Amino acid sequence: MKALLHEIRLSLIALQFLTRVPVPAWVGFQPAWLQECLRYFPLVGAVVGLGGALVLAAAAWWWPPTVAVVMSMAFTIWLTGAFHEDGWADTCDGLGGAASRERALAIMKDSRIGTYGALGLILMLGLKAAVLISLATPLFSELDSAESSHVRQVLLAWTMMGLVWCHAASRLVPVWLIRLLPYAGDKDHAKAKPLAMRVSWIEVLIATAVTSLIALVMLMCFGQTGWPVDTLMSALLSASSAMVIGAVVCGRWFWRRLGGFTGDTLGASQQIAEVLGLLAWLMVVHPVG
Image (tube, rainbow, N blue to C red; front, side, top):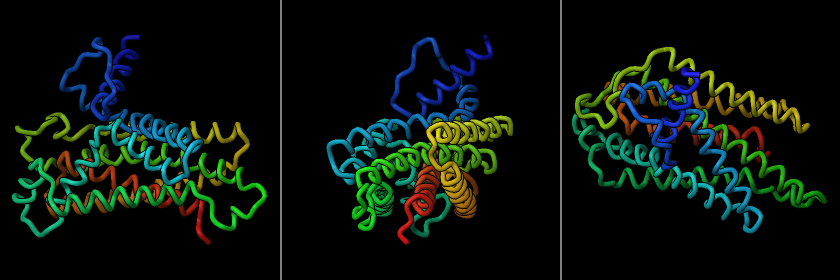
């Protein structure tokens, strides 16, 4: 029971760290727990994705997919306090130009947003919105069908599942980068000092197992409802492969420019992995051809 209570505490600390959701006072806090709670980052991502999916489904009852998607994205951004989006914008500012390593680190510490950060944020959010709208909107050929209303419901369900998976799996990428790369900034002045140290392989493997469990739950739920499990498997594998590619690219990018990771680049890696996962999901679930 003591071990179970500790795991619950760690999951709540992860929820508090990555979102605005308040946690009970009995949870407490110790710096070492912040590193241990990394194992539950994908689970928190699934919660965020599920929240966005529910908002998407509710909004789709009243408004077109474009409006529903924007409302869903606004909810997830509010829920996380734009935590990862802020890291992406700062990374674009620091690494967008040809600044030296020291200058890039100084730029990323600046709370003000620059041209690269603004453009990167607009393009990232615009691309996410475009992908989600394409997922949820029937093609003209599908609208000609006598079952067009059913097609809309099916596409909405696939979009919701894509949100859950891509939010969950993309939060595994920063966990791996923390393990594989050194911290590039000043450890003594890091905002979350435990995250500036490499995590153990145990934490990384547990986080990976949690992500795999989320995929297994999705497959089991699919099997119970009679939906095409093979299509879901293809979507999961394609999105996961795209995120792995994104993680490798981010790792090489951060190593070459900074010699490691910072808190901002971890947020950027999550954003890149999420949008790549959604793009792959779209190719499998709702291809144009």
